[in-house]
Image (cartoon, rainbow, N blue to C red):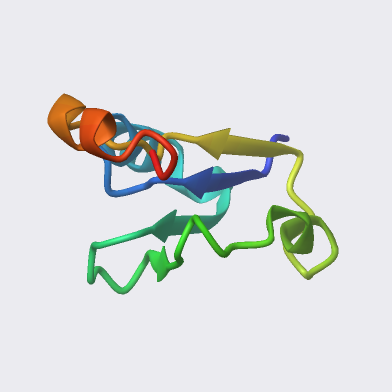
Length: 80
């Protein structure tokens, strides 16, 4: 049975994925949502390798996190 870590659970696609597969999700993260079921992380500083060295031990890492506003991407391409 797959065990997922979901990065970007508060995105449009992430919310739908979370709803459908929540029983298989070990950890769901967000950058902005205050929902209790999501762990808030900063993607720019997060050490993804730590997920595989902890209690979670996922079989899949799914990344739905993104900047969805093109103007923000054009203004700060290095960050985005």
